[in-house]
Length: 389
Image (cartoon, rainbow, N blue to C red; front, side):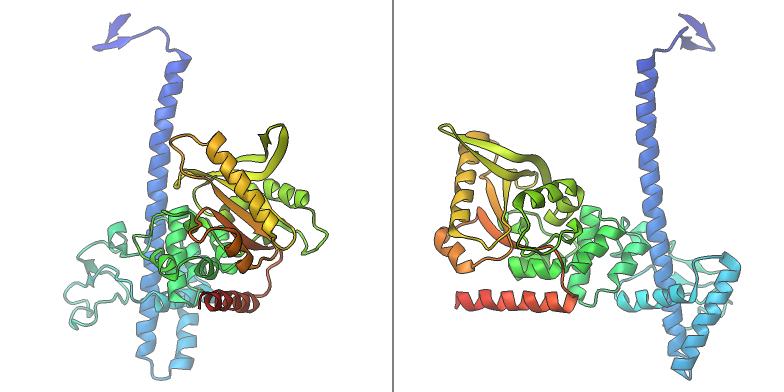
């Protein structure tokens, strides 16, 4: 080793040294990129909200709102396109206006204008109208976003603002951020009425808590169950000729979409897991592990209406896993039977009243129109409520 400029110098650097250095640098760059992406996301979301507010405030002062509104949006679109290029078409500018109308209860940063600008005389008029302005804080500051999530892009909010029900909209917003759904995944959850399906299969209060900013931790087995499950992504027809093996193959082939439908926390473990009892072999269709609940989840697939025998078989699977597979760190196993139809009374009579480990849910391979699906959900909910009386 020789000294050069006061720094030690070696004649050669090993490959392992450069690899470790590369890995550390990659971590730094990836973290910086994520930060930039989050900053850009929230900056554009807040900017479009502010533009929408400008348009609404302008239209409120118009003499003839309908005709004036159409023309002001067309003119603004043309002027913005001339200056900034693509991204400011008439439909997009209308989206900015709708975005503000849907989320007008959100609080952006307060903006103050310089003396002499003509915008600072009215204390009630604190929204930007254009030109140079001064402000208490930067309008694109992430902390000033006030409830707009930095992990959600404008594409996410374009999908969200088309959800009419405010509770459902808040639920999808929080779940999209929590589970890192991309735009396509968010749109699928909205189109398959995830919020309504959860309302049917869980306690309404628990589902509504998920819509809160703080969210709700997954604490009980019922928290991970849906009814019905939407499996339209498989591309299989609704048919009595469908074989369980074909359904299982389709699910494993489309595992990424299936995990999205199951929900956050599921990890795939095995397919056709063999269980041996005194020389007799049984096979559990699909086995998962739920990270948050710290337990195995066995899924059995049925292409016909649920029977009491199906429930008994699942009970055996669950008992086997508890005794032969689980460790001291694992919580009791959960069993989920996916079937085309079920009689809830049969389920209740076969299982103990306090059952929180075995569940049966319907699945749909072809989703009916939204209104039809809402009607079915309401019918199922009414039936359940009537059974409890």
